[in-house]
Image 1 (cartoon, helix red, strand yellow):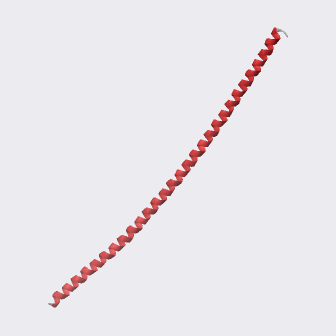
Image 2 (image 1 turned 90 degrees about the horizontal axis):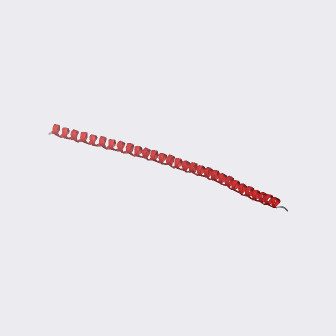
Image 3 (image 1 turned 180 degrees about the vertical axis):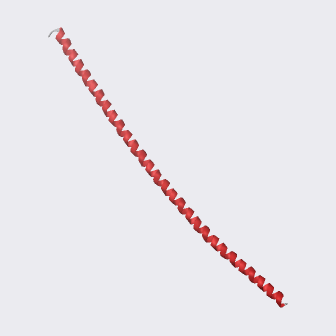
Length: 108
């Protein structure tokens, strides 16, 4: 073998080694890009699930709030009717007392 052939062979080996290195770097780059896309997709999915969960919670809270308001209105209405009935009883009692007083005055 001549020196020139040996240098050419060594250059060829170096080129092949360099090409394999470049291929490994490119493969690693593809892997990392794919991994990043996978992580981004997973992140988006998780965020959507979190948003959906909090939307459900918010809707449940709103429903509970409205239910409590309706219960309060029901209790308030019942108490107003009860107080109105008591007020009518008091008025009737006052009228009865007044009639008794009038009857007593007319009698005497």
